[in-house]
Length: 121
Image 1 (cartoon, rainbow, N blue to C red):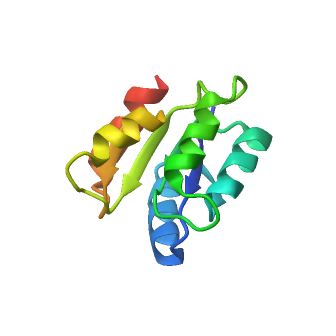
Image 2 (cartoon, rainbow, N blue to C red):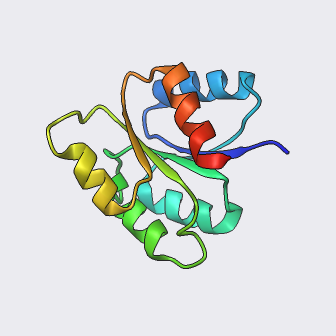
């Protein structure tokens, strides 16, 4: 079975680069460009895992993560926050919002793949 990942990223270059690398590894990728779209696509598609940017238009990634994690239908879906926000406390704040893991940009693909595997096995 192919693992389905929802990639939530508003930057087209980041979205394209990461999705191509993940597709080459055999993952099926769908996209959301803002937090509100992330919530609705999560509810509609029920992905196996979500990669969530934090700096998003409409609804930020912090709030989208909280909404997904408080919905009984979607709360079990693992979320890995991917962010350029590497300030002290950001990891804790992401985990408090409901994220299952946290990683910084630029993405280290091997490290990210290890986190994806750990959360989906």
